[in-house]
Amino acid sequence: MGKEYHLKTPLSVEDIEPLRSGDRVTISGIIYTARDAAHRKIMELIEAEKELPIPIEGQIIYYVGPSPAPPGRVIGAAGPTTSYRMDPFAPKLLELGLKGMIGKGKRSKEVIEAMVRHKGVYMAAIGGAGALMARAIKAARVVAYEELGPEAVRELRVESLPAIVVNDTLGNDLYVEGQKKYRIN
Amino acid sequence: MREISTQTIVDAVKDASIQANLELGDDVVQALESALEYEESNVGKDIIKKLLENARIAREERIPICQDTGVAVLFVELGQEVSVKGGGLHQALEEGIRKGYKEGFLRKSVCHPFTRKNTGDNTPIIVHLDLVSGDKLKIWVVPKGGGSENMSRLFMLLPSAGWAGVKEKIVQTVAEAGPNPCPPTIIGVGIGGNFERSAILAKKSLLRALGTPNPDPELDEIEQELLTEINKTGIGPQGLGGRVTSLAVHILMMPCHIASLPLAVNIQCHASRHVEVVL
Image (tube, rainbow over all chains, first blue to last red; front, top):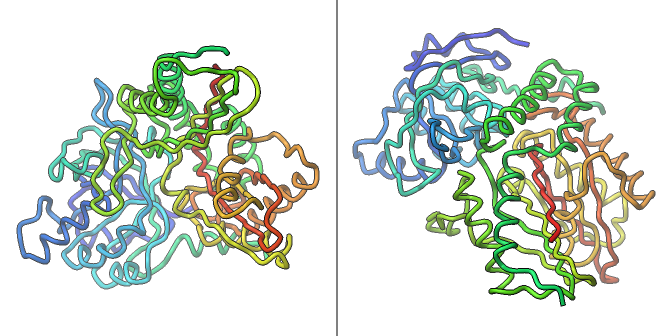
C-alpha cells in the first residue's frame, strides 16, 4: 500500500505533486458534486464565457448523485458514479485549474494526459459504499441546476473523505499497475 | 379464482423496493465474507471489509447501500387462477415503486434519453411477466444500477463458436469492463432463446441466491470454470488489483434458432439487490 496524505481544499500544485498512484488520501473542506448533465451545462457557460456556478481553480469535483436525505440527515447514500462519462469535459476543467476528481473507473488517455499537463489527480472512492461515504459528509447544499434532481451541483463540506489516488501528475495508472500484479496468464 | 387487491400489491412492492435498497441480502454478505478469505491484495481486503461495513451501516441507519437505487426491474409470475381486483396489475406495480422510492428516500434515476429530464418518480418500471399455473402472485423486485448495466453486452454468435466462443466473450466482457461496474461483480449469463430472450435470461440468472449451485450439473461446472478464468484477470475489488473480480457466474440457457447462438452478459455490481414477495 502507498503513503497516506490528508488534503485540505482548496488545493495547490504543491499539495498535488507529491501524490502517487496507490496513495491513500483523506479530504477535508469544501468539494463540489457534478455528473455528466451538470458538466454539460458548465461547459456551455465556459464556451459562452459566462460566470460559472462554482469555482474551478484549486477545487475537487466529486462525481456523485446522492440519494435524497432522509429527515435528520444532511445527505442520503453518496458513493461515486462511473467517471468515464465525464471524460469529454475533464481536460477543459483541468486547464482551468481543477486539481482533483473523485469517482470510480477508468479515465481516457486524454484525461490522463491533461492531468500531467495541468497538474491534477484522479482519485477513486469505493463504488457501492454509499452509506459509508455519507458519513464523511457534514453539510450539503444545492448551488446550481436544482432541476436536475440527483444530478444537481452540490457544495459538500467533508471531513476525512477517504479515497485512493489512481492517476497522478506523472501519468501513472493504478488500475493498470494494480491489475498487472495479480493477473495470471 | 383467488382475488388479490391492487392495494395489497402496491404495499408489497413498496416495502420490497425499500428493503432491497437498504438491506444487502444474506447471500451477498456471506459471499463477501468468504471472498475475504481468498483475496490476496491488502487493498482488496480492505475494500471488501468496507463493503461489509457499508452494508451494516445501511441496514442500521436506514439509508441505501448505494446511492444508485437503480431502475426498478420486476420479474412477475402471475398464477392464472389469480384475479387482480381494483385496477391494473402493471399500474399497481408502478404505484408500489413510486411510493417506495418516495417514502424510502431512494434516488430517482430515470430520465428522458435525450433531454435527460428526470421523470421524478423512478417510473416507468420494467416488468417481465410470466403467466404460470396456480393461484399465487410472485414478484421479485430487482433494482439495477446504471454502472454495471452500462458494461453489459449482447452477442449474436455463430453456432460454430460453440462453448469456446461463448466462454471467450464472457471473460472478454468482464475484462473490458475492468473497474467500471464496481467489482467484485456477479456475472449473469443468458444463452439461447433469441435476441431479447438471452438478455432477459442473463438478468433472471441473477435472481438465484449466491452460493447455490446451478441445478444443471454441466452448467454448474462451466460456471465454476468461468469464475476461475475471470478471477485470473487480476482486476480485483474495485479494479485496483486482486484475486476477487467476481463472486459468481450464473448461467441460464434455453434452445435457440438453428441459425443462431445468442449470448447476453449482464454484469451485476456487488450491491446485488433482489427481494422476492409471494402473495
